[in-house]
Length: 357
Image (tube, rainbow, N blue to C red):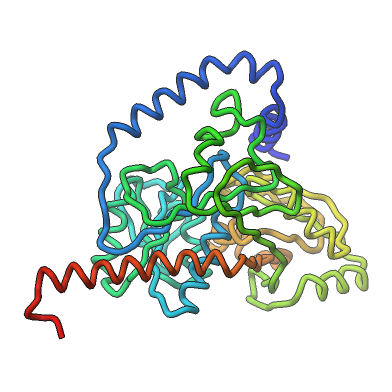
């Protein structure tokens, strides 16, 4: 386990309860929340000309908002919509708005936007200012009729039509805002969103009157990074037992234990490496390792593809994640999108009556 991962684990353990650390940092949390509220009141909201769906969280990380975003986009595509995606692009080197292309690297646009682009095939733009990213995306792709924002629940400068808060396996921790707790906003924020997605197999207590929808995940196809060959996780488990291979699971995500548990559920027992969220692979964590097969996440794979050594390591297998969302959530989103479209049509009729048929 990396030093960063150890620190992250320690913080999440502390944030799961109200202990000495939380008590000492509570005054700072009041200051943090006060600054955030002041900033929100002073923020000027900007609206795009298409409906905006924001997928975010109030917990600092590891809720699974990116898989939720990918699943929502795929479902909207299936229903005939033409979505585009905007994201901050955490960890990228540039500050200006950028469009994600086939040649983009994680260092340029961020690992999550790159993963989303490859998983969905829809246009993606990244930028600290989400409104500007949305403008650039619409200019490059005027066919887009809905924008989904991966993260941005706290980015109040962008007007939104539907807000989704994702709650993961850690729930809301001790219920306190940073730094005494793990929350960006207090639990009461969940009362103001349009939907809560519970992305966990655990029994998480969330006190809110907002509609809740379940998310469930399972492994899809596994892809050998170097060759593109595919197999199911169960087929690979059979090979491991048949050839007496030594397996390794590695994850550079905020909640790696869930990934490891899913691997073990398929009868694959071996060592694990917690790389730390958004691990950049500047150093090869598998150099000198003797394992015969290594399972990694899609978020890590998008960075390994651009590495001349890792991209040729035939031990690496990328495990894809298939998420299933309550269809009533997609119905709720689509209702808002249809209402938006009708409102725009009426406005166009009033502004240009001679063009109406």
